[in-house]
Amino acid sequence: MKKIFVYIGSRNDESTLTIYLKKLIERLKEVDSDIHIDLHTASSTNINHSTGCKNCFTKGYCNQDQLVEDNMDKIKNQLLNADFIILGSPVYSHNVSGDMKAFIDRLAYWGHLFRLAGKPGMFFASGTNGLNYVLSYMEKVMNYMGVVGVGRVSLIPDPALFDDIEDNIESIIAYTRGDKEVKSNDTIEAAFLSYRFLFNNYPKDHAEYLYWKNNGLFECENFVEYLDKIKISV
Image (cartoon, rainbow, N blue to C red; front, top):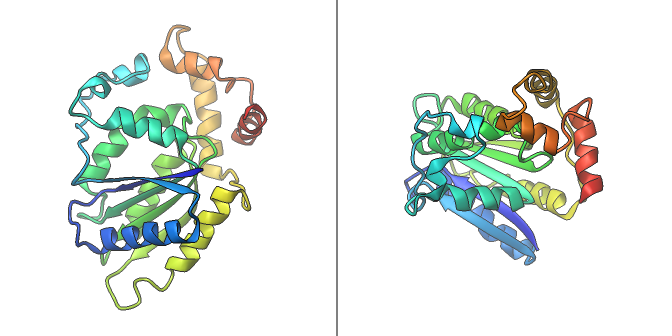
């Protein structure tokens, strides 16, 4: 069974973004019954804001993940097990929503570790302006976590809202079935080389150094090589 993770950073169940993505999910299930969707919306998910303690960077874990009322531990496990990742945010003041930002901030340390390396992702933004900025931001931060963007979709409220939904479904299905493979890009490669040099000079007990060492990232000259390494180990 293929797993798709979806996070909708909107609290409005009647928003263009929510309506579109729920329709997308409905059609995905109709097209391929062998798909499991882990859906989270801002209104139904509790994500505490980052405290800025930097414990996740230095020690490799977040104390808030253990809080009963916080859902990030569950979300992280679902992300790690996902075959495809979908993020959607409304445009608020030319940026992502506060809920989407909290989601990203709690995953920030993964952006040093490529924890989601090789997973395809698609990004959705709704609004009338600022769409490109929000889409670029979501894709960039997920690139640093190793997610390879395979689609960016602008959702503007109009009668043609669903015109491209079948094309997006076809693309998602192609990646989950393995008909298409993700490819690296310049953003990920530049980040990989920069971090490889930086973390190799970190203290040997630092969480980031240990993750890179224990997972064989230092052994790879570039991200493409790391992707090949992951495929062989699966």
